[in-house]
Image (tube, rainbow, N blue to C red; front, side, top):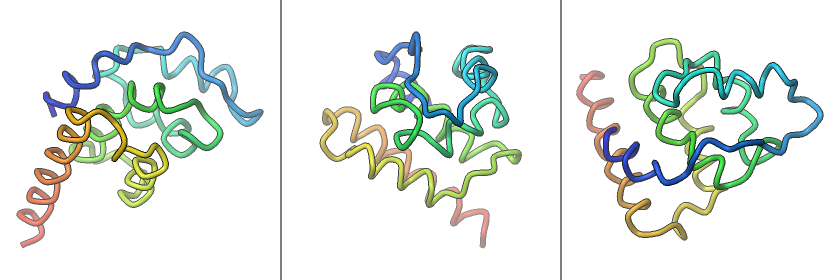
Length: 121
């Protein structure tokens, strides 16, 4: 996880995220209410579902990605199915990102897979 946060730290908190009409001011304020590592599942809920489709762009997604993956792996309150989050990576064309970013995501996915397999035995 630390590698993800370090690798994607170069993407700052967006000053504004382009959103569709479905996003309220309250929804956007929740994304800025806490430091990235302290955002809760409920803070990111609306963004997680709508990232890259009706909320924000690839740079915004890269900012929030470490926390989204962190919650996916370690927060029992997380609600988003893994397939949905992984589809967001595909939608963001992550295989065209800089090599260090791809490597950080690959390392996370490998570790996460091993973790899930170990607890399901």
